[in-house]
Length: 255
Length: 255
Image 1 (cartoon, one colour):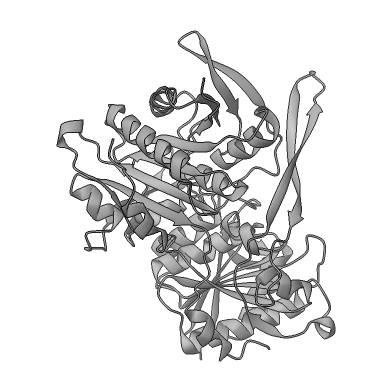
Image 2 (image 1 turned 180 degrees about the horizontal axis):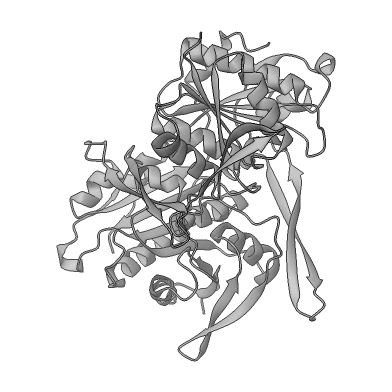
């Protein structure tokens, strides 16, 4: 019997279809432990909850115990799972399967990626998996990809403080091409605020926007996904702009 | 008359003392526009609000118009300021003055830094400024440092998608040493969850933790601050682990 311990989490919430598919896909690799937000937590970035108490609730799905829900963010879930819920450190954290792509600049807004980042920070090899559509509901191939990459991570390991960010096109398996290492793109949303008036005649705004893809190179996440292939981006959290350090030495920084 | 336009924001909320000190410090550089969260939004990471409507309120401080409050996150404030509130793009975004340090791994949880990151993503040179204490209330030297660095940024510019993350020791001016370029450290919090029982006999947890400083090199943000100097870290948002790409090419990624 396998002694591999897998922590499964997400940002769409513990009742989302994607986390159910992911937990099932991981079952043949080891012992699956689900700890996920009670409510949907998309676009929360790397938020943590320090000003409110956290509560943990046992959740059933299909009349069986499924996992633990936390009234917090994806990053909270990983922290509390490791410190309070699991009896030992997991061997791997797998976050997803998210609905909607987490490529390019979206990586920094993504709750799905932040859960995997939290795993990486704590020292656990971690993966984030996204299906690049909000409406496509067939998680079967994304689950297979998640399982394959998780088994490779368990076999080969990852560098310290590194996670793999996987984006799977929202297409049937036979229309999807290769699974390729990718660079994070520079594309972002061009925000548009939709200004409206409520029944009390007060102004409010909805944030929306259209996706701008700024990259053309074949090894960039968005470009790989547009070619109906799976993008696997290694992500690390040293944000220092090392080349600019030399220039900054010349500045007059002291007032 | 100066035509420089400065956007001032924060994550401690529009009524915090730090943003008032920052707005005052910036006044001699150009036209100051304050757009900040209505409520305190610490540790929100790079969250954006897509599921709730945003509202904008005019706020007075000391019986004078001070700025616009938004019922959202620091990143929301920068987005809505640029698209809906200001009549032209600001020349610089300055976020702070935060109470509490934003060094090392804290950078990725920081709302203060995320506001500056949002500025950098939109293409505006940006600075985040933090005072490394939750209780120290003298923002005068941090304000001078912010003004000096902002004037250097306006003169020399920053590389694309780059911000400067400034951490000022919580000490009187005459006890603070040099202002130095810095690398982001690897220190993180070792979380401790304080488990309690509420009056209804239900369990809840407070997240707390103690700071672990993992770095010793003299050019690392936490080390510079511990030496009573100001750390100025250039931050960029390409998270790709470029060196690991070659290794990943050898993996069997396709299921």
